[in-house]
Image (cartoon, protein in one colour):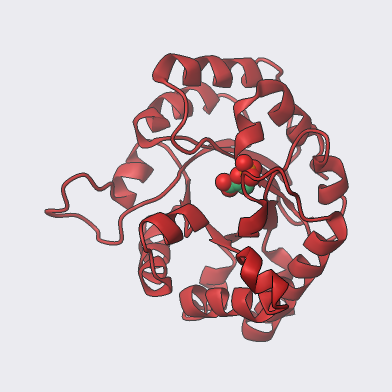
Length: 253
Ligand code: PEP
């Protein structure tokens, strides 16, 4: 079975003590994860090491950075490299979140560079894509999202592509309380999978987890995740509430 992933994106929230308490509360539930299930905590950079120390003893619990820089090392004051992230014990990195694309003007080309560096340093990229409301209203979401994939991922070999996790996150559903319906999510995910199949072959496309993101909560996760092409979620707001995120973990297929 394809990997099913509940990924928490804490964004720029929680102080150090609050972060430790949240992790402790979730991990205290001792939710056992079968081999095809994973929980990933995408925490702020200063908390990567602490989060790894706390999750280390638990099987299939991993830590992720929320971003990385597109150069290996050097005079880039304030930036964080993939090597630093890997050496902290994290094994995932979110690349191309819509907030990075919008507020930090990260282009598809820059994201492709980040993908390459992450893979070279044995980090699994969680590559985000998704359309704004105006694009959905004009009915062009399929082509728009396919182009995001093409521009940042189609240079990869099928072998490299198998190491990527995709997160489809319609921007109109992020932090708005508006969730795509399970049918809308399934339709987009199936479409993305066929785009991947055309480029990399069906067997590769069948292996790639495609997560849904956009106001996933404890109350709607089960319905979303039950769709055949929805392989879990990338969760913002609800991942900061232990009870909600625990329910989301339980909702994984
Ligand atoms: C996100 O930021 O990736 C996200 C999906 O946020 P939220 O769950 O709050 O909509």
